[in-house]
Length: 392
Image 1 (cartoon, rainbow, N blue to C red):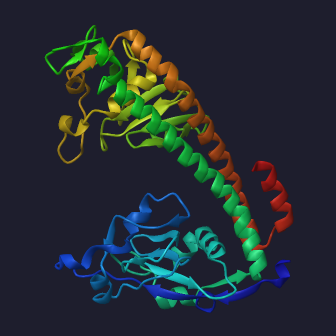
Image 2 (cartoon, rainbow, N blue to C red; image 1 turned 90 degrees about the vertical axis):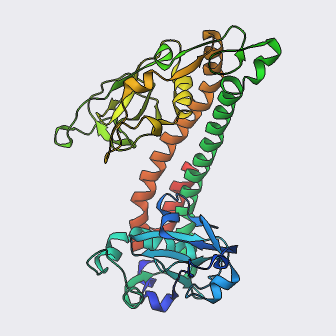
Image 3 (tube, helix red, strand yellow; image 1 turned 180 degrees about the vertical axis):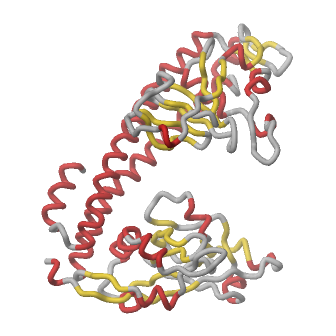
């Protein structure tokens, strides 16, 4: 019952612990066995828990800095640059000074606190101060007040939300595995030529290639085209994704290209490649494959992934990719039947990825609706449990 909930401060329910950075002038402070997390480690982190970041520190680094060793289950919260990244420590861990971590006291659930902070990111940002960048002081964080149910209900709420997130995370990991399998198959066939070596190899202007294969330019395989203008003020939300240099960015009621399609960045950000399953609108900051010629969509996607676009940067302050330069790139040209066989073998993997993405999007919407309602006591746990069981 929501009437059983108590209003408590963060300082009542957890110890708030800051972090620190050992002196970078002493190499012995780093490359040890102690995980050390910075806000950058959480910038692209898409899971509830984290075990380690890009760098570790040593016992010496821990002793000679204000970094503190936090127990498993601590809730890591970035409190500057930016405020609001949250994760749960999946083992003993340390952080830099960009964090104020919460070590829950008895009677309080790490998972519940995690979701509580996730649901109140904007509220936390409102209490940040500073001119260069906002920072949420430890004393301020300790004084912020929230409503908490008893521990069993905290666990029940966290279980409901966690079940949804577990499914999203499972789909994400499954997709990573499927994408890695398709990429490994592409490399085996079209980079290392492993299945074709017994049939004989021949010299070429580029490298030794299988007999019957050729060498040409990229535009012998596919043609790239600049995307289309679409200012935000002219966009009407719809079912077609808008693809920028950095990937999907909103939707529009109309499309310009029939899917499946492949894009890569043209301006601002170059080097990333995207496979789009449905009809889409490629923005003018991207290049899209207008004609697949000898290639096919999944093959073209992996081929473009294998290229180093940074060498073609024709811009200065703003990275820019000139498609004519890319079209001149020498490439190996495989027989069409080999491309089509690769496409046939890879297609089920990509279809499953697409299904998982759509399912995760639906589950995310459901979770985002339930999150504030459960954390405020607006809806009952039992009703939400039955709903989530059907989804699971």
